[in-house]
Length: 428
Length: 60
Image 1 (cartoon, rainbow over the protein chains, first blue to last red):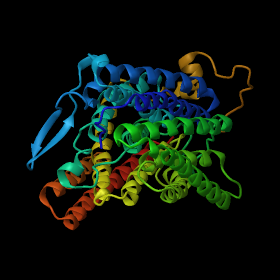
Image 2 (spheres, helix red, strand yellow):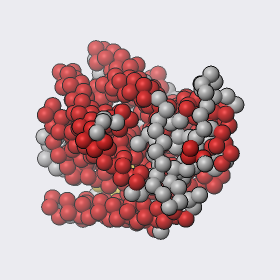
Image 3 (cartoon, chains in turn purple, red):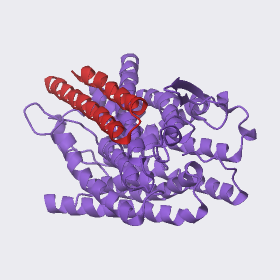
């Protein structure tokens, strides 16, 4: 799946330009995370997004890029069953000689820098209102230093998942052009691990009662974040198609159209379902539906026809409100950002659908092996890493800090100092 | 129980990898990869149940 041909000047300039727009995706996600949290944790959430971004970028530069880089070095490979299983990159340490590397490899590293920011922001939204910033940084360091680089090498570098086509005749190998698996499922499963460790917000699941509704504090942030994120997504998917699929420039309009069709149809499905179920459309669930469509487009946009993109988006949009409700009411997962549904579940659906609708034979099996790796290896490893970190640096804030709000507890001041603070019924 | 579930999940992953190495023909390979994912799903279900029972005990 890795592109290898040298880039022309036009393609280089185009990909570089796209990657300069791509940071709008993490910016939109940060805005969504803030809006879905409570007002008394808004400043901590946004500052946390910036601090986690800084941590992830630094750790990836110092450590992660070495494992993720498949462009230089032969890679660490195991020989198993007469095939080479390339499991880690052997890029230069501390980005040494970065200027001398080929243009394609430089852009690949830049893509991964932007991707790792998204990966660490996804679980941050799920731990809203109770996850300490320092603990969030340690989790971001683990994701950026170990988990993301390895999986990025497997799927985007010359790793064993990308080589499934060449080694075992499974289509074109594991296809993940825009990062549905490498970014979103890794982030969504990390969110699940973080939620299990940090626990639900105080008062969310009272003993002997139904779960308490804790709506986000600013629907405008959430919905505007969705619009901002869509621009970044267009850039991510287009740049990914050029970098990882070696797609010709003529494919880019289809990629862009599919990137718009998937969230549009997902939003239509979520809007309809919430309107039928609750009598009125639910703004935060509709935002989740839009985002779920974008996540599926990360897997499908470059490899399926527009009609298939609509179908994939419709299914994602239908799953989202039902799964959000199921996770909260049936299995007590307190996920304010809905990351487990939007990024993990819909990312897995997108990966499977990419195999289902892709023209190559054997592609479904390659996608299933990728899904098996994400579920069977990434989730337990991330949980173990987070569990060990939690022993040293507790994830959850002290009860008094949660009662005060993360802004006052961690920053000493609120995001909206002139607002009247209302009594919170969930703390009776 | 949660940890037992999380320990079962890598077994499903290794089953999928073994399917690639052991079965060259597509139908058998696909069946075993699907079995691997089913094992992972069972492990996840056990982990979720473990989380729920532990969570209920700790509710305020």
